[in-house]
Length: 176
Image (tube, rainbow, N blue to C red):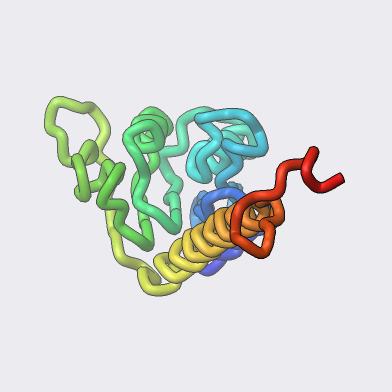
């Protein structure tokens, strides 16, 4: 999970939501990935998808039945579907995602008996570290947005026409 956190920080450095993922096979790191949908203009470029694609290429097979996926944030439905299709045997995630989590927070696709692959799922691993990276990112974004709003407000205030001593606005024609 430490390596997945490094990947999350790499995503954050690129202005992406800081999520990182690592695929491990037989105790060896096979592939890593981090979020890059914004920079890549690709809605499917989640950390898990990046790591799964790289692992499939590295192992020469789209099926990864002996692999485990470590990810800093609970996978969404899209990623859970790809994890199932890849036949990942175990998913380990750090932070739960109460808005889009597909491993139990919103839905639990891996527990759905009608689906044909059921990876083992373990959540909450290094939870505080994973949550901390996400909180830092969104806190920085909120602060930057607030600074932009304040700056825009200051520009509006600074662009107000000067007033005469009586407090009324001075018309450009009156000023000359």
